[in-house]
View: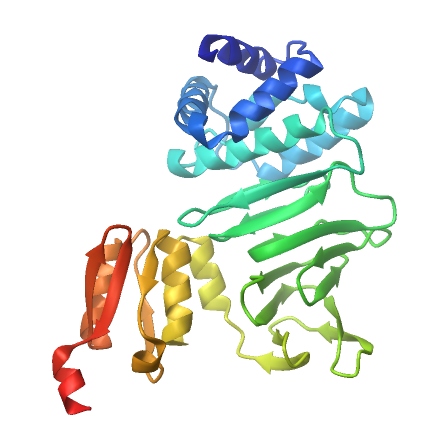
Amino acid sequence: MTERIINIANRFLAEKECSIQELTELKRWLSDPKTQTEVEGWLAQNWATSAEVDSNTLIETVFTQIQEYQKEHHMKSRFSVSRMLKVYQKIAAFLLIPIIGLGILYWVSQADQPADQYTETIAPRGQKSQIVLADGTKVWLNSDTKIRYPGNFSKNQRDIYLDGEAFFEVSKNERQPFVVHTSGVNVKVLGTKFNVKAYSDENQIETSLFEGKVNLLMTNSSDETIEKEVKPGQSFVYLKTDRQLVLNRFPQDEINGWKKNQLLFKDDTFGKLVRKIERWYNVELVYDEKLFNDRRLTVELFEGERLERLMDILSLALLVDYKYDKEKIILTPKQKNMQKK
């Protein structure tokens, strides 16, 4: 099976004809967690052997060329993957492989996908991803995030559905607004850079605007649909239970941090920092909420900081004892702190 699928992948990379059945097999191979090692090995090999190009070549150029190629040939299944590999030639390998993997998965999946069928991309706990949509929009996905998007955007609107946190660089198109649907707020834009944090298991939905203009569409406590314009440098939090919109501190450093694989805590409550740690490191923390509800933490970690190092910081800064129990970490107040109470 491995030899057959590698053959299909190599033919696809070389822009040779592949059947719909073969593309379906390739899509399944690229997306299956059980074959991740094989996929990464194949991508790494092709990255290493691709021809060098000027390191200043812009990624945006590649996707413009892909779109032009699609218009000329009307065939999404035969774009130049090798051309995309060349542009990424001088990007660090650890970043290159997941980006190319998701990029190929997206374009392959469109080859046999009708317009009303949706693709779902997931960044599981402990991982982050970046994809580029058919219109050239770039999306960075934080840990424990998934988005759904159609095989082809409609002529009137570009709709995607988000559960988690993502940063968007939306390609401008005034005739085709880009709308991010979440569990409580819809974010409507024409072309801009913004971040949306909308985990379905949390009460808050936070939208932060870096450039351009976005409008928030939501219902208030009176069941009235309201629209709020957000300006660059502003961040709004929508409280789902109260259906209220609140102006918030602009978390630019935190957003830039997670995009660069840096974990930041800014006066975070204990519950908030626990959720961040669980998503970031794919672990489960067990603790008694009542014993920690008055503790907050502000700290900036280095890129790729180990979990053990973070737990040591928590132990010193917040007077926390921790121990590993199988796949869980049990948190308790330090004994000396308990005696004071």
